Image 1 (spheres, rainbow, N blue to C red):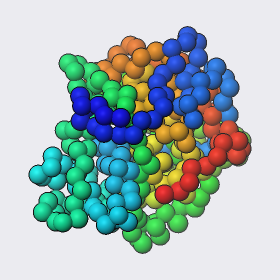
Image 2 (cartoon, helix red, strand yellow):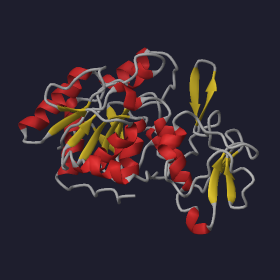
Image 3 (tube, rainbow, N blue to C red):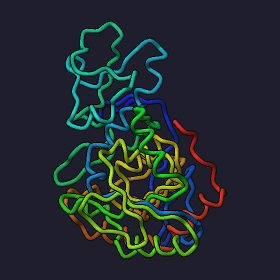
Length: 318
């Protein structure tokens, strides 16, 4: 599907936009719309605000576009066709990835250009005080190539826990993706009472889940490696939900009313959103606050239990 307004060319994929009916949640797990309260169990880990920083998710999306390039004898150059354009997080996420060409490779013969880069993220564009979403965009499962040290770091923290991220940045559009921390606490406490181990990545800021063991990691990559050993991720749309897809674990992702799950959500996750049109407001708005409030603790618990009980298939690991 070609969308010249956003500079994107993709194969057509069935739309998974928001359901317009009142009083229901949209769940984009394989494009299904379910009434509220038809979800299910889980575990917990929370990652501090720093791990939700804008940019990690974008770079992980890039790894999906580059997937398989090396096998075709190519490396993907993200840029404008003349210059490879990376941001301050690119090197961390692209580290060790044989499918991606670094800056300085512009004249290499194996280069294949892709327009997804800083300043041209394709899935949106700014129109006034909000993002306008490109409904033709679909993410591809990304991948992270971990170092031996990162793999060893992940092993030290065990497996089978649930990661929960209760924090969002407090500036800009961050509040529009914030589910209230008391609800995250309620989910964590319920899961703990059901016998699940609870963990939280912590970096000295944001809300601490009382039921969670705190874990500090040296980098986002180390957190992603720990995440690979989790049974489930729960949290907002952002870097960690993209990382969950990249490392092959299921997730319950709270979209609310800011961004459509059909644009940046994965069919292998359960994506919770309010009915109506996502607003994309770049500042805190009452619409997004109400959209997040429409997602109940029961909804999240039901979705989580469905994954943990094996009722939903796990993602195939990257």
